[in-house]
Length: 190
Image (cartoon, rainbow, N blue to C red; front, side, top):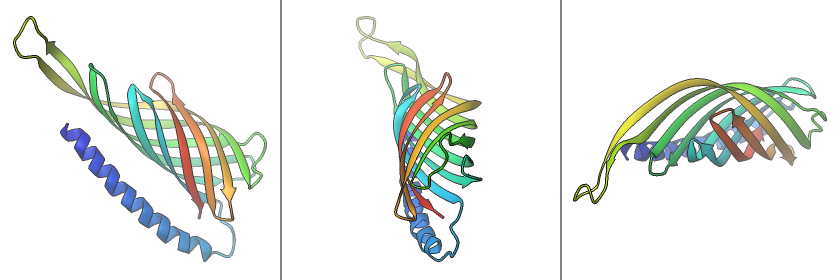
């Protein structure tokens, strides 16, 4: 339970920092004479990471040309589970490469990507459980498991430009044997 409360506090603080960064970056973006090839995106998603979980992702994307782009991202996920896995906290960093099969038309951009994710997860699992009629008072014993792994990202992404500086979009990220998460995303061109 302590881990879950700590994660919620971290996510609240991170949300405040993101709002301040977007406010600061929007004034810088309007002061530029030449359009930048960098985008900053924030995504919120819900999906399966072993158990149902909410995920917040921040991504910085560099467009190399009309067809190719790359990104780095950091994501945080929290989830409350079932009778076996009680809670899950995930921190993920990723490096991704994208191809736009139809080309980036500046207003619409459909991308397919692959990347490498570095994942650190903590989860609380029930390791021993007693229930009536064997005992008077039910008991559960928990264990905290920490995992570190590298995984492959498979990404389908669509973004649409609103005005000259803002982006909205949707993304589906899948990691074999680990998670499938759809996102709604908001971004700003730097």
